[in-house]
Image 1: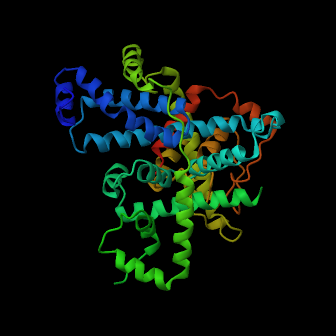
Image 2: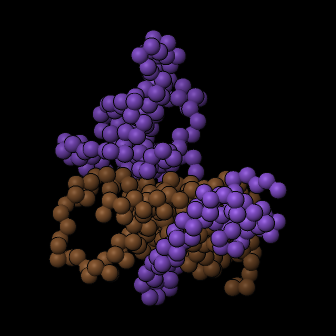
Image 3: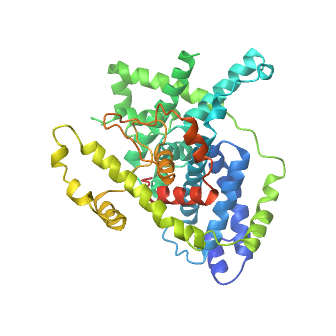
Length: 185
Length: 214
């Protein structure tokens, strides 16, 4: 079963073989997880997205007609569910806005060098989080998953030229965000 | 050979994936364009910074747990269709109407100026219309609304939609394009917002997702 192609697994599933779905999960779970992780930045969020993605896949697999490759289809579902997760997170953060202004505990300050590195990592993560959805999606798929623009074009249904523009602007925004943050500290 | 938007090719040029046919044109351009050379240098610095960011691995043996938990969830799963829940089915139309009215208010606000108020073409349509009629008009007139605007760093639609869910009027200043960027929260509103439940959130996210251009 592990040697079967994606379309063969789907055909098996559509003919009643539940184990075919299991093999799809095992084949793609790491990819899905890491795409989700790049969007939501934490393990628990990525785990939730991963589970949601495969539940959605299970619900939809029976009617999948192969208009796109399984690979493209899975990526598209993952991006959409990850973005929905981020939208929920933003609305919830809105409720907790007062907590953002609570004084930090001075005892929790790390040594200077480790703090600087941690701040840098946090700034980059923040910068990526703040990208507009389209740019964020293009950036995650291109930079972290190293997908060819032609594949991303099918996933996001955007022209290759548009993707390259989005990618360039995403990197510039990250750069600007970090630079501005350093200027104010 | 003239290449348009050379700056968009710089990321590929930097990581060595640029097509051979385009490389000479880009290199020739870089010899004569200091702003693109600067952009390339800044890009290189940003990429180095990104490469240093390595997230922690998930807990060991995590991937052995994914399938069993998905299977458990599928076996015990209730429908996630929000419209199957009678309460959410009741809430969907008023919540949807509230979000749509927000778009109308924003459209009207952007059309209004001191000299143009009397000539606002939407006034005749909006005045005296029922909620259902307004929904039909707006859906016919408005394209899918981007959830995030390139001019704003913070996605604002969800925050604005929440205010309307609470029955508050949105006092949009027509001259303020980035009304959520310097967002201030008064105490009364934060208490009211905390009363929104998961069902409201779910419906709001679904409506916003339907209206989002990806």
